[in-house]
Image 1: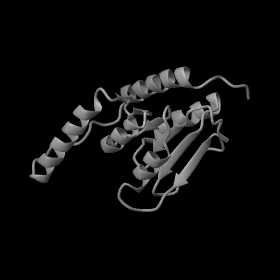
Image 2 (image 1 turned 45 degrees about the horizontal axis):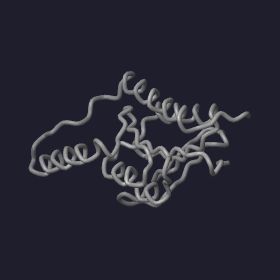
Image 3 (image 1 turned 90 degrees about the vertical axis):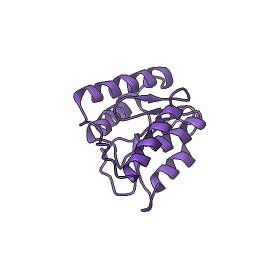
Amino acid sequence: MNDPRQPRIWVDADSCPKVIKELLFKAAARRKVTVLLVANQPLATPQVSYVRAIQVGAGFDVADNYIADQVSAGDLVVTADIPLAAQIIEKAALVITPRGERLSAGNIRQRLGLRNFLSEMRDAGVQTGGPASFSQQDKQAFANQLDQWLTKNISHRAG
């Protein structure tokens, strides 16, 4: 299924929007890149040999810990989870949020700080609001980041 010389795409699938998963399924079929969806619940996946769902046990951060343990340098991880992103970046893998933001060593400390600040505010009873609705612009930003990563990291292989 996976060419060991090629990076893989890991997906923190419990919270990943369906439209982003569909983009990843198309990329897997077209570019023959392994896409691994990790979740605490069963996932429906298409009959594409390069797509695999991995169900982990229930519990706080179980899926995140699985991804962090299995990811290799050069892999791509799709997640909006900032602490997980920080772990991934330390392992020299790339992180893209489902909204198309690339997280890196250059911006992860700032994102962790903001996340922690907002968490403290919520714990103190302040209403901080939630994220904006997922938009077509978010989908396009993700598609652009994914395409850049695929172009740089995944060789074209004949079917």
